[in-house]
Length: 125
Image (tube, rainbow, N blue to C red; front, side):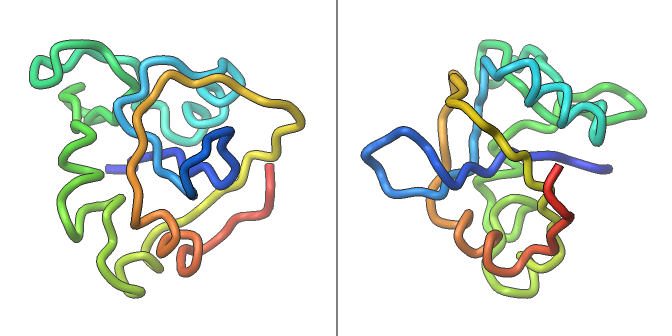
């Protein structure tokens, strides 16, 4: 199953990045369109576990949500690589932006740097 996540290098925050966005409830339409063109099963969906809707990956066959906790918070999971080998299995496609965007989201720390360092990269969009 193809899954998507958003990794942000430049965030208007006093915290040190980069970040991987999690439990995202609002994104710019241009970002949603970019992701859904590549991963149509990434969409806003209700999670009974979290008790609200957020952008999540969903099974293309049955529509079941694949929650952010399992993708982002389990060591060795798709967006929680623990070493160079796991990070190099990921791919990054860059979205070049020319203005600030607003997103209502949480963020994960720690693994984004490993992903940036070792993931395969596509040319910028």
